[in-house]
Image (cartoon, rainbow, N blue to C red; front, side, top):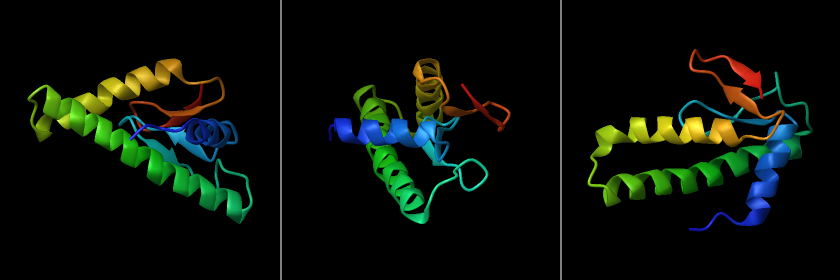
Length: 106
């Protein structure tokens, strides 16, 4: 399924306000109260965006593995490659998970 532009706008908004970050496994991650200073409704929306966006990303990763004849064991490698690309292209201010598990803003 195509990621609609309103989803991308929402992802960017939540990355900028610190509610959502890009983890080291090529997925969005909800960051919780340490980073996300927002009302409950905004936090709920951020959680929903993480769920739907990650569902789309997992589908893409699985299709890529299948199209290239790779087994499930390749999934970690695929996610790693995507995570690096996502981190490179992330907007300034986006929370990113470093390889050591710490989080920093780009």
